[in-house]
Image (cartoon, rainbow, N blue to C red; front, side):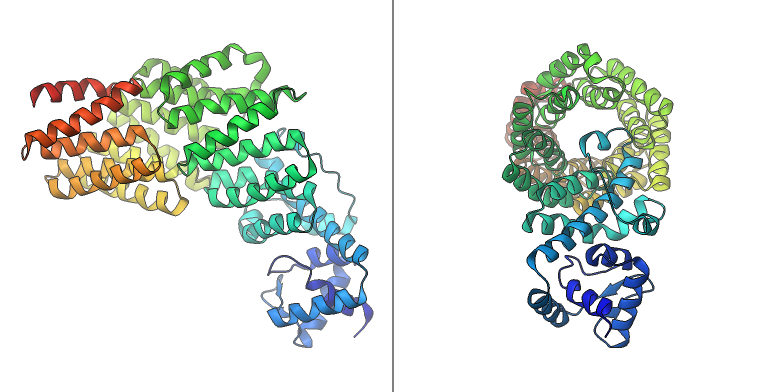
Length: 483
């Protein structure tokens, strides 16, 4: 075989993923894309490489082992490391281009990557789209972990950060945990304090979505502490504002509201980009406390910001929050219209963030309208989606609301089973609000069967609702007085 083909085969074993593109192989070997493509085709002709489709190639495990042996025997350690460095540079640039579309003006301020690759490689990247990330997601997650193992610490955390927004809006929270755990080890090894603060913040975002509030709080507290003396004032302010979300999920609603208003008073620190950080979390905490008009005002401001800035993610997010508040205010018909519009926008854009929650809220709206079959369907969809994305707090909510809808259908035994499952899950993930709702649901179940059991469950629910300060305590007090 000609030397370029031999070189490609030797270096293929170094590639961290399983699906090789000619452009990635070109970056790895230092060849042009044309040379890499020709070499790969030549290896396919000799049955050394598999042609997976018209643009991707694969390598059998035994061939990979042979490739690595040849590379170690033939190419120097510095040459092998140089090849990996070029590959990680190329992949990082490709991911950054998409991240810049998803987070314009934000990600480039945190990831200062200067790519000096061959111009032909830049052309090979083509148009940057989120669908490219969707296709390459598994490979990219593997790439992050491999970069850490190979000691490319800067590439590790910068690639993880570049993938964060995409994984977040598509609901790939486990991928965030995998990539940012590797990124955290990398920045700690490199001693980069600002990067440590940043990675802890984004790792917390995945833990809070998967219902592990203790880990989320631990990582975000570390993030705030590490950024206290940072010159990046905006990022430090963001990390602190994000604590409000964790307080809310943990049932510390008063603390969440106090921190939210305190951050709003420091609005100048956050600037225009602070709006989508501050308003949603504060609005949700106010809603949970029964302060619906204030919550609605904040979510409308969030919606106005999203429209002004043409931000589809925040637009669909604000719509779903407005729909949720409308449910709490008893306006089920308008809430249903808004939530359906939010889901339609998710379908059009491919954003999957909080999709399960919106389906569950739509089910509540349908229940309020007496459309019980539709309500049951939406709760079941929410439950299925939440299990798939690992959002255990949403699963607990879907179980509780499915229980309420089943009870409205006269299926009391099935309803009790849903509340029992919700109570087990909410207790396991330390989600007090859903614990209280599950206990209240079981109290209703026992009301006509065992008054002592009903009273015991109402007392436990009331203790939680009082501690949180939520309006549900009033209903619990009334029902307890009746038993």
